[in-house]
Image 1 (tube, rainbow, N blue to C red):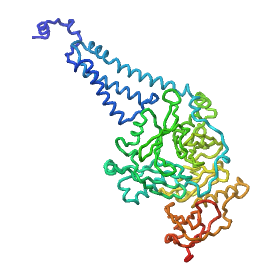
Image 2 (image 1 turned 90 degrees about the vertical axis):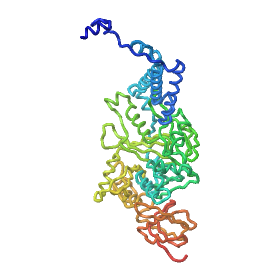
Image 3 (image 1 turned 30 degrees about the vertical axis):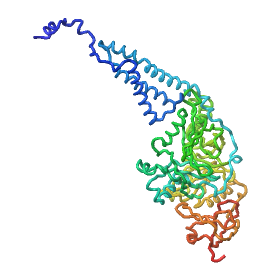
Image 4 (image 1 turned 60 degrees about the vertical axis):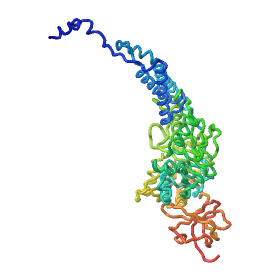
Length: 578
């Protein structure tokens, strides 16, 4: 029997209409009635949505792109459930698709609407149309550096960069056997002002899930505080442990607790700080979008969360307590200035003429002033030359911004200049800190060896970066720098303050208090005498007998006259008797 005979027996015509008919789909019964199918689909969608929200924690805010992604995912899940549960009548594929489309009209409309909002919302924030709005995100004031940036004594200069502070924190934790086996220092330390002093604070993380399981009842028992002037490291023990942190799980996870407390707020930067009493807090900066629907990121307030109790309180940006040092992250500040520098003369100027177009240099540092922390970064031309035309200081709590016109070397040129001054040692310079030394903008940096240990310090004049001073201590470095300023006729007279030829004064008395800190790999003792307020810094490397010093011993210390709380000892002698 051939194919022709077979088709005739089946009642069809060869090449006829039956071959052109669409494929018949086998009917399948729907799962329950229409209401039941919708309810089941909704339950599955809600379950999926709950799990997704618990894990991804999207802000339920119309200015958040993740919200629309969330809506699209929920619509897709609902549609799939409806397709699987609806069944279909017997008929062609075309009929089946028409029936499916009718039942999925709502989720399909949500998907289309979400995509449309995302596209249109992005267009309204397109920089081509909104260049002026971008340039106005950061109001800029022009200032006078010598008048507005206070001079600080050499013993008030922060000596540690973030890497060095983290190394000291890890080393200190390693000395504590009860903590090092269970916890690890987080490297995301924040520079803050604590009781008028620049410090960095590091929080601890659980080493792993099992360490969390064993310690979750008591919480994290301490944090690490590093004095950036004296390099003293202290593990601060808490009466009650930290219960809310990034290494917690479930409801005590930091971001989960914030999200469930404030489901509609968008958070930018969450950093660890301590108040003036040493109580640990999480400071969560709250975002607002000022351009279009999704663009022009700015900060409108902050949520302060007690890291021990989990209590939270929202503050508008103008009402944030003064002990909080960082509401605006350095990265956001740099981004907003770059908008200002590039677009304040219009978008097309930034593309073609580039008249007066500027940008920040690659890197930033922090300055402690007036009980606040200010971000410093250089400003250079967008043409990418090797010089700065000025720099900015921006308050991290209020976003008060000042621009200082000062043509000179950009930071990496100054770093190379400092490294060249001690090239025989192959030291590497840290990113500079901008200081006011004798009314001169000055780059200050530490010089490290291959092991990351600080060996020397350097000061480089911003405007004349061939003027480079180095020293084994900050005091020696500053003295040599001021001498160079006089030699180069930048200063007409010798600067105020202790000078090499100035006579020292001697102070004698019984030791009332002794503290010790590891500085540059050497132990430095801080001695407070009876009826005195100052701490005298004595290096064990220079004066080994300081190691055996006890409270009650009689000593004589020579130093330059000063009213500072921390005083460098120029000579030290331990005496018997009183």
